[in-house]
Length: 334
Image (cartoon, rainbow, N blue to C red):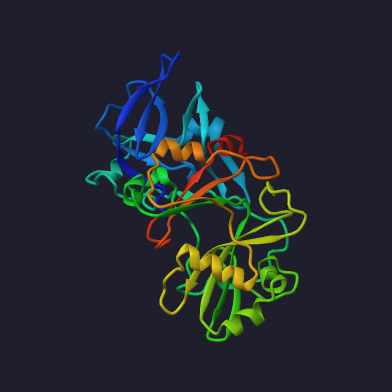
């Protein structure tokens, strides 16, 4: 389960211009708008990340007018999302630790997601025929869910001075193709999909002839990419047909992921598109603020891009994180 709710220490408190009742607190790499005087530097609070979905209970009723949601995918509860308050960006919710007596004795960094009954807000990624589910994603095949850099700012220092690459975060749904011991299969983020010619998650296999190509390759391999196009998310790329942009190539037997150059060569050899490269460098030197600015921008369609993904070039999964475009987050509906 993703760590959506943790106990965190307030690192800084800054005023908000023209506000007598609100101020901004800094938690991890995030900023949250809170009541003035509610926190001071060093205080512990319960931090709910963006996309946390809080259960219905009296402690959260103050969120009802702005955050209550009721739909078939999520049920009833309160969704935490990026917002602007008095011109200040607020990403997440911080509440005083003393509001939660059941958390007494816990410490900074402790994950309390399950204890508080919080789930991840689910946005239906596709309205097209994804395919018939035949089970969970096979054991050992990893899901793709990059951590947001504000939740792990220490990764910036871990990458500093190392070779890196930055790719565009595509607006779509994660699609996995695997070839293991002579069997080819396809998965959504969490489920295995039956082979059907019109199933969305099988389209990369048919479009690029992957049955034949992967059999010829003669190695166990797992490919993960973003399926983009009509009826998927908002189709910000404005594609007229579905496309698959590979971002992970994994050697199944060793468990290792291909370094960037090897992944590019593999995809070129198989005729597969790869996620667009924005930048490569020999020594990573960005700050959090610079990364947030770099995540802004547009797709070729002219619409806001979702953000960027930053990785260690030599060992892509050892240091890897996403930086989302706050301009796009503020426009998000639902």
